[in-house]
Image 1 (cartoon, helix red, strand yellow):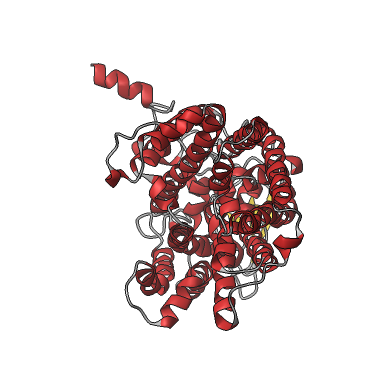
Image 2 (tube, rainbow, N blue to C red; image 1 turned 60 degrees about the vertical axis):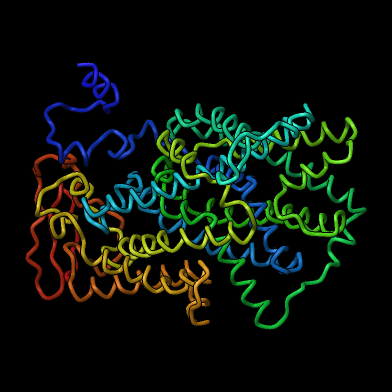
Length: 526
C-alpha cells in the first residue's frame, strides 16, 4: 500500500483512459508547447547564450589551447571558427522545434522512429548526467576558493577519504555544498528559466571581466602576454589548431542535439535563428578571449600556464594575501558559482553526477579535452541523422499527429517503430571514429585513425548524414518530398488519437493535389 502511494506521487499527471503506449508518447512534457508557453523572444535567446558562454569550462577549453602550445591569437582564431561552425548546427537542429514547437525527444522520432528515438533520448540523458557532474565539480572548486577567501583554515581541513576516490574531504565537502545549492534551479520549468539566465547574464560577465583586468594588472600590462609565441610549428601546429577547434564544437555538442528543447518555446522561427547564429560565436569568443589572456598572464606571473581559472584564483590566496585580494577572490569565485549554477538536467542527472566521480575528468587539460571528444562522437552521429532528415529527406514536411501515434500506418512508425536507416547511419558515424578512440585511450593505432578522430564531430556527422541520405534515396520512407516547405500535413488531427482527416495520394507523372482541412496541399512525388 505504501509503495503504491509512493509510485502514484512520482507519476506524471495523465489521462487514465490512455494505453501504456500512448502514455509513453504523449506526456505533458512531450506534447507540442502551447502558445502560452511560447515566450522566448530574440532577447531571451541572446541572454541564454550570454549566460551559457560565461562558465568556467569555456575558460578551461580556451586555456587548454595555450597549454597545448598555441599563441593567444591562434587560440582565439580557433575559437571563432569552432563556435561559428557549432552555431550553424544549433540553428539547423533548432528549426523544427521553433517551427512546430516540439521538443528534442519528439523531433528525434521523425528520423529514428517513435520507439527508436528512445535510445537517442537515453544517450542525451547519459550525457546530461556526465555533464552535470562535471559542472558540479567545477562549481565545487569555485565553492572551495570562495570559502577559503573567507576562512583560510578551510584549506587545512584534514582528509579522511581514501586516495582511490580521486578527491579528499575538503574538496568533496565543497562539491556537495555546490551540488546542494544548485538543486532548486532544477525545479523551474524551461519557459520560466529565462529569468535565471538573465540573472547569470549580469553577474557572470561582471566577475569574468574583473578577473581579466586583475590578471592584466598582475602581469604588468598586456605587452608581455601578447608577445608570447607559439611553441608549435608545421603539421604539429596545424593539427593542434584542428584539435582546439574541435574542442569548441564538442563543448556545445550536447546543445546541438537538444536545440529543439529551447527553440520549442520560441515565439517564432526567427527568434531561434539569426539571434543564435550571431550570439553563439560572438559570446563564446568574448569569454574565450578572457580565458586565453588570463591563462597567458599566468605564464608571465608564475612562469607556467595555468589552464583552470579556479586554480589560478586559488594561487592568488597563497603566501598570506591581503584583505583586498581575498575580497577580490571571493567576489570572482561567487560570480563563477552563479555561472555554474544553471539547470543542466533533472534530479536523476544530479544523483548520477555524484556517483560518476566527475572530478577525475578534470585532473588535467588533456583528460578534459579527451572526454569532450569522446562524447561528441555519439552525439554528432545523432545530429547528422536529425538534420538530414528535416532538410533533405522530408524537407520540412511534418505530420505532428503521427509523432504521438503508435499506428503502423504513421509516417514515423517505420519498422515496428524503429527506423533502420537511421540506426545504420548512426552506427556508421560511430565506427569511423572507433579506432581513433582506441588510440585516445592509449592503444597503438595508425596515424590516419588518430587524425580522423581529431575531427570526430565532422567525421561522425558527415558519415551519418551521407549514409542516412543514401539509404533514404534507396529505400524511401513515407513522406519524402522534393521541395522544401515547412508544413504540418496533419493539422487538425488529435495527437495520439484517431485520424479524422486522411491524405490520400494518387500521383500522376508530375504532381497531385490533396485537400487537408480545406487547404490545398501540393505533393510532388519522387
